[in-house]
Amino acid sequence: MALGGIALTLVAFLFDAAPLFVPGIAFTLLGLAAPAWISLAAGGATIHRTLLTDRVVEEEPLEASIEVSRGPWGLPGAELLDPLAGAPVPLHNWLSLISGGRTANIRVVARFSRRGHVMVEQPTLVVRDALELARSERRSAGNPAQLLVLPRTERVRWVGQDLGRTDPNGAQTAAEPVAASELDGLRPYRPGTPASRIHWPALARGAGLLERRMRADRDSFPLVVLDARCSGEPEHLDAAVRAAASLVLELAQRGGCGLLLPGERRAVEVERDLSAWPGVHARLALVEAAEEGQVPRLAPGSRLGRLFYVAAQPLDRLPPALVSGAQMAGVLVLPRPLATGVSQPTSFEVMGCRGFILGGRQRVPMRERRRPEAAIGVSR
Image 1 (cartoon, one colour):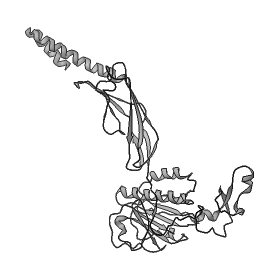
Image 2 (cartoon, helix red, strand yellow):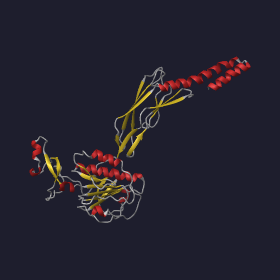
Image 3 (cartoon, one colour):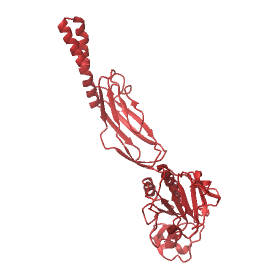
Image 4 (cartoon, helix red, strand yellow):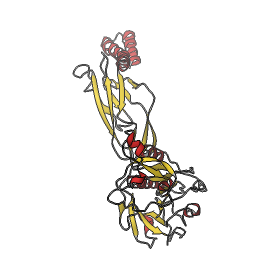
């Protein structure tokens, strides 16, 4: 634009064409003034984004507040580009030099469909004039925001036998072993606990009513095992992780359970107070696909109660190393597309999967192979 104005001005001088002086000078001034104005306007603006949390569950809303302030030159043709907003957000009416204010607050709501670690770039302010002769971008200062998207959970729907049934007092229905004699710490008192298990010194010190936890209590905890081997699509592993998270949360609320994560030999315990649940939930969000030969294994000497085996692909049988140490028989859980290949009645449903009670060493009775979404095995 500026070069065209200079050319017109030179032609006006060469040919003594007075009518060309006006557009030549106008084009020259416009071509020089527009970039200067846009540069000053963008340089005087500030952008600040605030996230209400750094963790969010899949498909749940994440709110962010973005504050944009203009300088004395206004913000002509401004729009905000933010990864959380998706589409550009126009700001020229709110921050106009003539009729707008000096600050605009934008509320953004975003949702994430898949779990994992997410890097969210800082928002960018785009400023340009009405004729789009000049354009300037100003990015908010700071590093990209780090978000952790957690797998979503749902209540387990017990269709047949309730494998997580509890009595009215909240204690597990299975009787505690008589030989439980090794002390393994203290826990809050549960109604119905014998007086001999109450830790009276703690009550005398003002710590409240506590009971002794015996080693056999933990050995009888149900165990959820996550098998991250996945030869199919990533969505298959995501489905398995969601089902495992739902089972852990359900069983923990009913008295406590353990979780064996891929690549580990010792289970993480989640008790009824759910104090360990936030950390376990975060670790489930970061689970990645394992290699075909990485079969879940427990450390030697580990005792199992009820076994819930969660896999991202169909299995011919549950791993013998786990089934041989389980105190009770097994249950297999498959997604609905694969459930037609199992003859046993459904015991429960969770995250689109169905549970079928099997024997601990029994082969999985599948009449056909279909593309899996997730597979879960359980023992009772």
